[in-house]
Length: 215
Image (tube, rainbow, N blue to C red):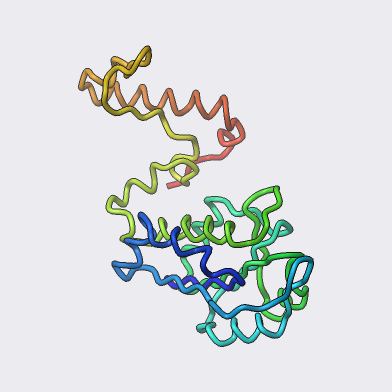
């Protein structure tokens, strides 16, 4: 997969994409992330111009590349949408800033508007990081264990929240690791984890329980 990000602030992405899973995915050659460093647009309150953005996209666009504009007016980005996008080989993300972009950019490039939530950010850079990180995890070979994806929160197979996790020490101040996790009965441990995950989902995200798992 290749992900191109068009932004007026390319340095914003340096530290994020050089860390953890995203960094390893690039090192392995499974993902290529390119952040365009040609500035465009104006100062505070300005709308980013159509001509520079259009030229940049056209110069890097490969075949049937999908173009997305990060915008609060866009369709909500979630795990299901991420799984659909992860099937594509080339994605271009356009980061709006200031007052957004010339509306003709969206029409001329047939860009799909995408939002990561109902709140306002200073620009699309943080949203692009969220989208990129989510997509990279879904690329085959990026995560060592294929099953780990199907068991994560919001996955098709298990659309509920994760169960509580614990590590050493067994006791910290007045907080202890649940006894069942120390007994070695894997069947009972899995049952406990399922119950905990369901309880947490009912409390924090009951809407997820209406979604049927798929194979």
